[in-house]
Amino acid sequence: MELREIEYFLAICDELHFTRAAEKLGISQPALSRQMRALEDKLGVRLFDRLGKKIAITEAGKILKEESDKIFSNIKFIYEQIGELQKVKRGKLIVGAMSGELSKLASEVFLELHRMHPYLQMKIIKLDNIEERIIQNEIDIALTHQPYEKKQLTNIPLYNEEFSLVVPIDHHLAKRDIVEFEKIKDIPFVISPNNHYCRKLIDDAATSKGFVIQPIIELTDVQSILKIVKAGVGATILPNSLLAFENPQSLKVIKLVNPVICKEIAIVHHKKKYIGTAARNFMDMLLSHVNKKNLYVGNTEYSFINS
Image (cartoon, rainbow, N blue to C red; front, side):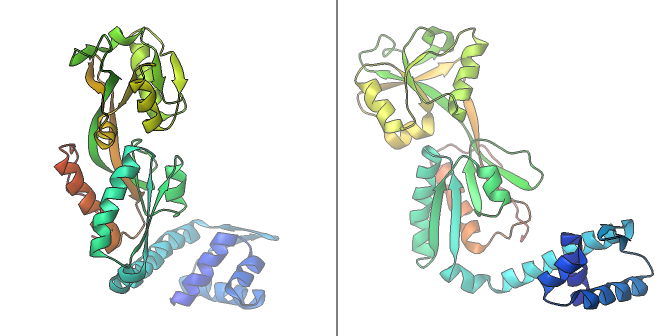
């Protein structure tokens, strides 16, 4: 069996139409039909059921398609490996990150990665639809606080981070280092909108204690939230790593307990995507940064399809 025959066969599987498959391949429809009949004769089985103008893949055809996909995936992998050394010098790395502390963390790592690969083009895309963008191969890897269950995706745990209460230094709770969650039910809040993942975690914690968070101001920009809290308008609840990046002055950060609000941070990539040298270096540097910040709780032994 020749690679050309497999290529023709897969084109028909994709289109389920001989004429469209022939146009895609740049050959005539009769020539494609002859090639498929010859392949079926060679294998001694029918690969397609021809039902008028419609065709369907037979059970034998499904087996051939599954194995053929593996063959072409391996061929693509070989080419990518061979070209990797040159590719990293003039290639691109696109990282998706939830806005906030994750995009800031990615930016820190990019600075270090630039020193290693000065001609590598790097881009951070702040987005919410990470799952869709990875599956569509629009980004190489992503930093997310929302592990995904799709079978096409691989999640690499980085760390679990807690949320803290933030109040002005003259607030009545500012003398405390730890506060029970139920003690904040009557506090006015300046907080993210309810369509944000972090807000959902906060609302769930409040619900578990029998009350509802009633914000007086809802904002997405963290610096604006902290500025308003500092002015004495209300309190807020934010992830600890984000507070570490912002280093808020004239504010008191208080540990929240019972319950502790916690979210899992992970690296996500497509299981079948080739992870090149630049992306691997980015992940290694990211793990190093996380370890330095004493945030790490994941498994340092991660693997990719090219390992």
